[in-house]
Length: 246
Image 1: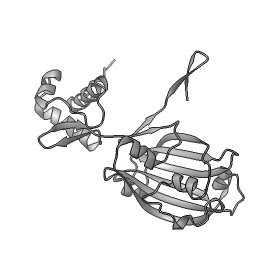
Image 2: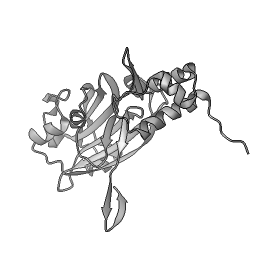
Image 3: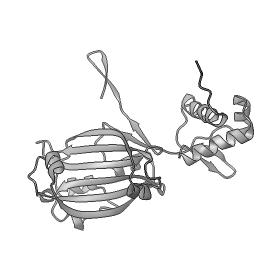
Image 4: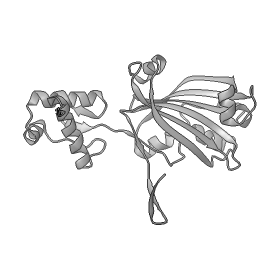
């Protein structure tokens, strides 16, 4: 039976990733000097630099002239929290930016009618926005909101303000609970252009539905996000003495 032997650069990448995990390095933490890493893993400088370059391209590391190689920041998305992108970014200390890609009124088709439990033809706002962190594209969010729940939404600031805050403060909508699903998708040519990827690259796919206490769906959102810049986090809680994933 043949055994798998990784190429030197891939093996070096694995050692760097393992070092980051073993030492619990987080955003902006410094890796050891190249000379030390070469000694640690028996690598030549060329192989190590090739591995570092590949990890920089993947968004895992970044280099600062005269300061060494550091762990790149990643956007942490906690699946159990009902928070907006703006709130997540602020809590993580990131500089966030939003670009409005499109805003329109659409009618419920069969899929949206089922999502919202509404009649075919009911009007919905469709809002597509590019989310960025530290001037790097992170994800595209396309949200649908019933027109009758937020009339005049087109007049609100959907670039610098939080959509959730607008819905709560300006329209007195109570965002009480939601359902979220995640998976892997392949980006389209249009998505790739905005996310600075190649068409067909793998990305996170997130589908969420946010409801009021009475079960009325306030927002349905589909997100496509860069897998190299987003970290999905789920918590474990104890229930009746058993470990339960939620």
